[in-house]
Image 1 (cartoon, rainbow, N blue to C red):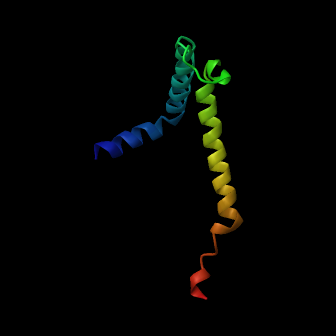
Image 2 (image 1 turned 180 degrees about the vertical axis):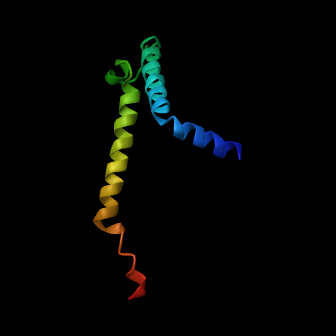
Image 3 (image 1 turned 120 degrees about the horizontal axis):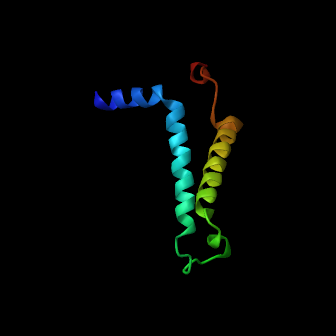
Length: 83
């Protein structure tokens, strides 16, 4: 029951939760500026926040491609098996 109460508490304060997540992401990018990049393997890894942006773009790409793939043929009518 405590988990349900926590979810309801956070849902009631959704805008604050979203802004906290934005702040945390910004803080991680700022911290990344101070991380030693001496052992980076590729050029883009020297850019501050590269992996954060890369992960965000990759996640969005996965979401959009799965939606497209689902609508392109995987999803079917609800009455498909009734026929």
